[in-house]
Amino acid sequence: MTRIQRLAVVLAFALAALLVEGRAEAADKAVIDARVEAALVDLRQLAPGMPQLLEEAAGVLVMPRITKGGFVVAGQYGEGALIVDGEKVAYYSLAAGSLGLQAGVETFSQALLFMTPEALAAFRAAKGWKAGAGTEVTVLQQGFDIGASTNVTNRPVIAVVFGQNGLLAGASVEGAKYTRLER
Image (cartoon, rainbow, N blue to C red; front, side):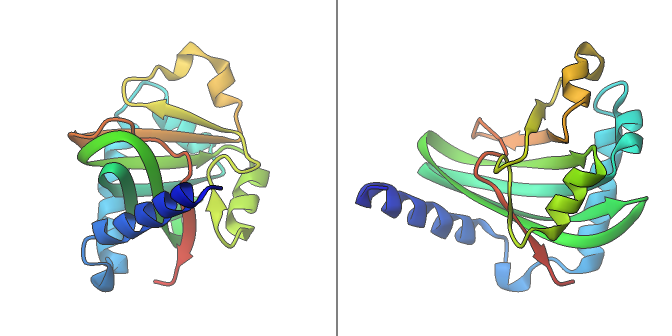
């Protein structure tokens, strides 16, 4: 990694830290729970077949509000909950940085559907899970058709990005790191 690339990564993560709405006053459990429940309602209504896909998942990580922003160097941050058998079992943060032609700010929601017990166990065992690092992740953007391809539903992890608001295109899970929070 060149010196410029290292500097860009450091700046991206610094920007991600700045994006956190009151990081020192991170959302408490009740606030995260309420946001997760509202996001689940939206998620179930995204596409026909989504409620069934959620039922089939071994676990679902719901990140109800991720904020992404930047100019050339961008960062993103959000907090959410892991749901297994209908219960919130743990809380996680997401942080990511990127470098490229980008400018603006946006918020969006994301859900990671762990379709196999093995994928869920690997996520829960990781000290800091990175999307795409050794795990095949399929990303669905808002407006997708679940029934269009069985290749989608046969993946170990399905990421759904929805509820985009703002002026920065390109919400994704690439380079995102998920870390367990104590709540």
